[in-house]
Length: 347
Image (cartoon, rainbow, N blue to C red; front, side, top):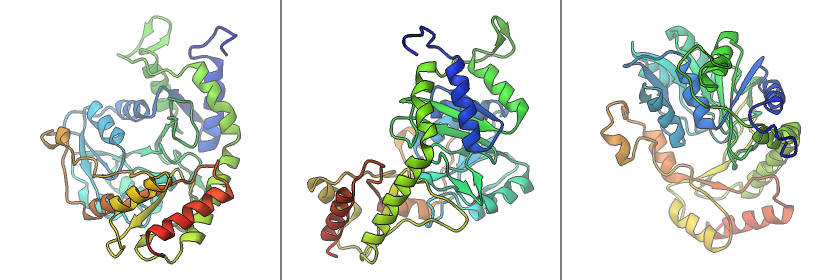
């Protein structure tokens, strides 16, 4: 690509989009410059009006909330389930109001939300569905891929299972929405200087697409390696008091963007103490996420952020910690992680 001199959005982006559409099982994939853009653009083409609400998870990266605000909507929240860390369909149903227009479930850590229960809620209330699939490329629910239920929004940031350094993708089966997204991302132009809407520069470059294409071709191998590592961790860490392990729920596949455990209240030390001891012993770890997404000063007085009672999300935010699960781990690395975690927790 660098030698070609054609480095802006071009044929390599189209090649990447075609391959990504195949992964998501939909006819359209629209590449954009990052995952937050994917969320914003998806909300923008749904023509939300001031006062319209979007219900989402309180346990997510801040981009989910920021996108709702950038699109001009009001953010409301439904609590999560502890077994998959994803939004609870029953809580969603209770949170719907006449102003609710969009549901935005977050497929967190690499496992999809319970779409079998979520979709009836969407259909009953006539909602639009935007899937925050930033961490779930290649995951499935009852054989159906992430990003195929509504407008699917994927991140290709450096830490994701598939990366273009920075980048994002929107997937859809809706021809009209796909067309609108392509026009919107290119300054509102259908053809050069033929403006149809007030648009944006949301384009992906051919350089970024070229980085992603070979990874898409290896997605199956990448996912299998992560799954094997997660299985080894689950086996090696089983039965440790105070440690709740992640699970793959029936009918779903998990692509293990993160391997997230809970340090429960009966553990000998707190989650933060556990993290500090792992770091001291050279074991990488991360806390994703330390608070519910609305629990920050910059959102407290925002009239478009409607905080709610979400006890499960609050508890998980206090207890969750992610251990290494990436494909480059060796058997020796996994043994070291398991041995160290057990030692720190006195197992």
